[in-house]
Length: 363
Image (cartoon, rainbow, N blue to C red; front, side):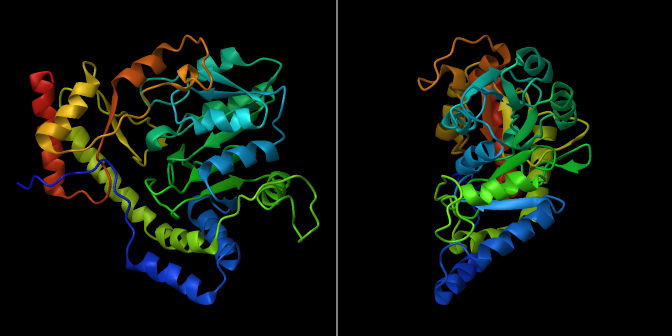
């Protein structure tokens, strides 16, 4: 059995992506243009059931501009999880609004609907669940709660390309949704993000905000940003979009093998209504997670990831005193094992052997 290092994540970029970039370079049309427009259309057709899609230069920019386009600003509150990457809460704070941190449920690491409901006040303008690790939040319940309370629903779908809930694709439930196209995501454009919306007003404001507030050159309608995606990045994304379905199927197959065979850790659960796309395969190690991760690397040459060891509410940038017990458990115990589509049968066997041996030894 080989002992070559197995990384926790492995971006896949091949000859087709390089050829697509080279074609853009040869064309001389490098900035946002026809390639971006085609990527938006294809992303919408493949992953959004035809819903509007607006390409931007990062996932964080997508969240920020989406919130601004939806009218979020000073004096508003948006309920977010603390157990996620800081960009979720940062994007709310950057609008001048206040992120309100809610707890997660431990089965899927997504926002807890009941806790969110208890936090809604007269200042609450929206809820922004994160489809963490590729598992969708309970979008049916969140859509119903948002409608009942007269507030908006926003989706942070950064890690959930192709996931679905109750037979409906993520990114099509909320007033807007954001997909990240960072290199380690299930598909990439090198760097970038895609924002989906079914609201024509939000879509137009998004297009203005990403382009200095202009629809036509020098006719600035509002104060905007330079958050445009380049044709170079869109060319990569268009190729990756043709492959992401196959990669997702491989991730799901790898995850099924791990779940069937690993022992001594808490494997990821999948809700009955959910299609999980396994951006990460995240287990819980209930005793000495960090020692377990170190032993995986040192003794078995297997990489892993800890996402996210410091909940957002405890980061120096927010420093909130909150009682979020499930968030604290997850931050202390979660460990993401390799699940990416580059793994072969031998890699999967090595991961299972290592996890089971370490769990048995109490590492």
